[in-house]
Image 1 (cartoon, helix red, strand yellow):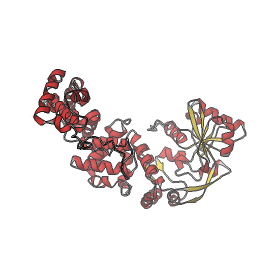
Image 2 (spheres, rainbow, N blue to C red; image 1 turned 180 degrees about the horizontal axis):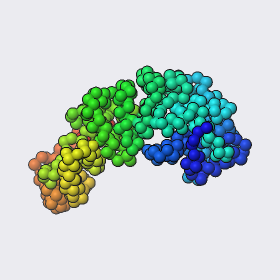
Image 3 (spheres, one colour; image 1 turned 45 degrees about the horizontal axis):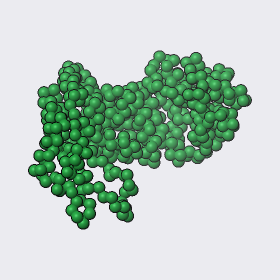
Image 4 (cartoon, rainbow, N blue to C red; image 1 turned 90 degrees about the vertical axis):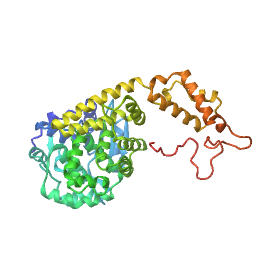
Length: 475
């Protein structure tokens, strides 16, 4: 009998109502999975290291019976027996007792089972194979998962080789759990995990990405990420990090910096993981882009993390001029604060007197840069003149207007006092006159669209549809 104290399990009231409704209808309702595991961890005085909001119920009710009982349901995985039930602001994943019929390391074909014991027998690790039935107070722990939590051991349920062959994602899940809770992997489980690493190649990018994000959300992701390296799990999905991981001191330093980035800033944690893997801005950007593309991050996430990686160095310092700070801010755009986050994280990871000196240096730089950001115009949109003003000076619509505004912005970045409408218009007239820009931007009779101007003709075969933009160059 497990020593789990059910009083440690405190589902939200909406979740409790879902369990009670199932029981009142004559079905069994068992809390299972991570919520039970984390309650046991907390009971033993350790930090569950996660703000878990997910509550999972296992039941003998079939999916159609679950959906008939509740008004608000989402059939998130009916073929696998899972229905999401919503009550108020709370939701629960309700899954019919299952047993595996056939697995291929990536997908499983399941059938419904008759008991909670049969359902627990198909779970990955003993620490996740504990069930609690609030209606009766029963706790089922057939594989001594509570004892393993107490002794700090991660052990597969049953035959570890079979468990990993059933679903190779369990390799990454095991590394995440061991890292998060500081558990030792039981020797036979560890051997089977190492043997199963090559099976990671068959997984989908989406499942691998989600595991990485769960690791990065931990309070100390370095523990799980280091297990990725020592167990060979970087090879198939993270080749950009292999060179860094081979240099042990540099790898541990990079992981310490990842830990020092606030957990809620996942983009910065991703960038901090990558920036130590290459020397030049171009190589850092290429590493970030290839890694995030392989894991199928969204285009917006990929572009932003790639940009952070490219802009990481060269950086600015407190002795640089105000104009240098403004020019750096203009190139960094909305990423400037996250770039400071990356550098502060590196300084904090240093520790000791050297790290303290680096932090003071960064603090002094930050104050100066922040003051410039608050006061100085740093983008075309902040100029005292607009594109319409250039049209009024005789220019035609087209990219030459953008070039002219870029030049005016450069002058304002050098001297913010120049951001005054009349002086800027005078300077624009001067530049137009000496460059012949008004004449160059005006289409000649019969010449069609001037070079570089937007083409209003319908797109030809293979051209992108209207409104699409080419991939950004991050320039």
